[in-house]
Image (cartoon, rainbow, N blue to C red; front, top):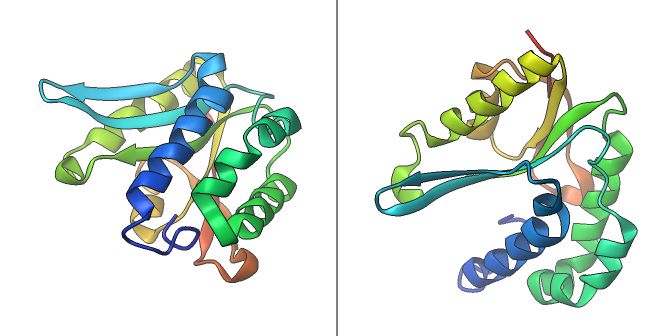
Length: 171
């Protein structure tokens, strides 16, 4: 996201707007998202889309185009280009798709992301279904590998940092 919203001062508010759109319009209708909480409140979230529901509906893109414009500004073309490339490269077999997983700064490295991923991969194993995601950093890719994901491809669309397309088949 740093590549898409490079202004450090603008990024926190822009990302709050972006994830509100993504959660409300894309993921929450399927009731498959996970939130990690402690006594201090929410510390992480993972947006999950069920099998055969991974593609962002065009109606969602159109309905939220003004909001996406506010988030990405002059980089809106890059954001939609990235989405287009991801959709082109996306696997076509039934799978759970994790478009986003995030953990608050103060608790990164304490197992929050692992706990959310374990919940998903356990479900995938029971249902005999794969899981798919894009790792946007080397740290993320290492975390996903620990949970059985393997890299299918590495892409650098439109000059972005390397992004690993990763799949985990059921155990």
